[in-house]
Image (cartoon, rainbow, N blue to C red; front, side, top):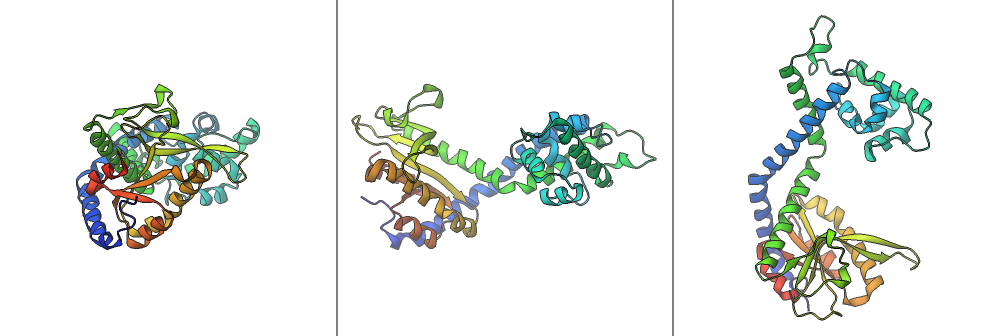
Amino acid sequence: MAVNRDKPSRWKADVARSVDMYNDWFMKFAPKAFRETRIQTTKDVESTLRSTDNLKNIRPATMREHPEILPTLRMSTCPPLAVDRLIGLAGVSSTLVKCMELEKKLPGRMAQATADKELARLAAIIEKMADPDIFVWLSPEKQPPTEPEIHRAATIVADRLCGAVANPIIRNAQEKRQLAAIRAWLEARGYKQITAGDGVKFDAMPPGTFSFRMNVPVRLEGGVKSVNIPIDAVINPKGANKRRFPVFFEAKSAGDFTNTNKRRKEEAVKMSQLRSTYGNKVQFNLFLCGYFDSGYLGYEAAEGIDWVWEHRIDDLAKFGI
């Protein structure tokens, strides 16, 4: 039985209420989430400055031991350097730089001597382009930096780093809040949470339990290879016997309509993988807050995906929970 996907006459009003709810949360809590991340990032930048003699001596050995500092170094230049721009300027392997950026490590097959030569070229570009308006101590006549000067410079670089990933910071904070809302609703009705450390698989959950970010194995196309896909909320309803399949929910939030329509295929892919593995007994649904317009909702409804609006969280009960 459908809960919301077969009621398009409600969609417009629900979208308006969901947008209002998201905007209210954003105004109250997004700055706090951003500030907390910026505080930690500032500490990380200060650590990078200490390890590089405040950008005056960026040694290959330091970059080899701490490849995670590369984004900080890129944001320390004038102008800040994108990954591909740094690769082009330094004339180094794109594999090296992208491995440092994405995996926080050097390529496993690259010899140390080769890596050190390329890291030295990266260091030379960073030192040459280091922003003198931020790192005021780099001018020849300047004395060693004071602690306030180092902290001020680290804060500016942290702002640059956080600005580049502002949307993921906000999205992660919103997801935590959404899962907390589901937890509170379930626990108020006597449900017990199972954590990853309990070692309980999704298809062995006792009735009246739930778990967050649980891996569910699915078969890929062809049926030979199996992979795990993470599900935000897995709920086994009360009174369910051992053969009852849990109900799945994906927590989704969005601060604009454009990104939701870009991402709408993600849920359809998950639904397809789950159904091809477990059949039509799968209930894969969305828990929505924010900017999800009729185009998005219609696409998901056509894929057989239902949803609960956070502003009407009691609809969870209509899924037999």
